[in-house]
Image (cartoon, rainbow, N blue to C red; front, side):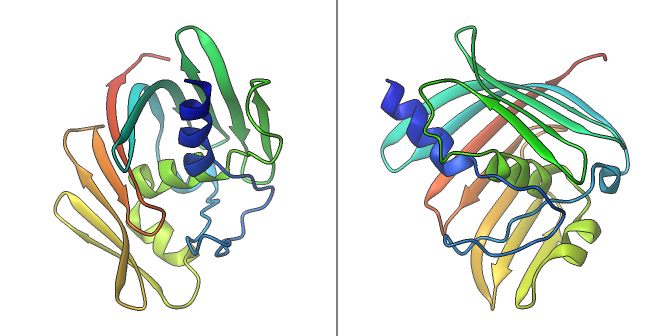
Length: 179
């Protein structure tokens, strides 16, 4: 079971300490947009269902974002797996002992931003050769006309992210919470 959690987080997470966008070894751009670029606030309790091939795993998350910071806590059955705080300059993280030392929070931040940040802010941050198209409830991230990831909104705060290049799907079910 721990190996499944580690697999989930290994794909969904990575680390960063600047606002730059770069393409890591996986070939995905690394979003690290300023919290203020959200243009509002988020306060969500989430159920994240991760699918990689035939495997599926579920974790819960608490997400809070405003103009000053993004805070996320991933937990499962009462155990905190990852806690991250992003202020636009510095990404801080605390993780459970069973997570590998090389694991960081950048991928979870990038996925959150790909789903919730305004398309215009994402487009401005993408490296050359990358595009983000948005039509209705769907976003398509492409590199030189190859679709790399799609986001399909299934509700006001719910979404399904498919990362084709890294081979995973993330179903996000959210309930707004009052701060």
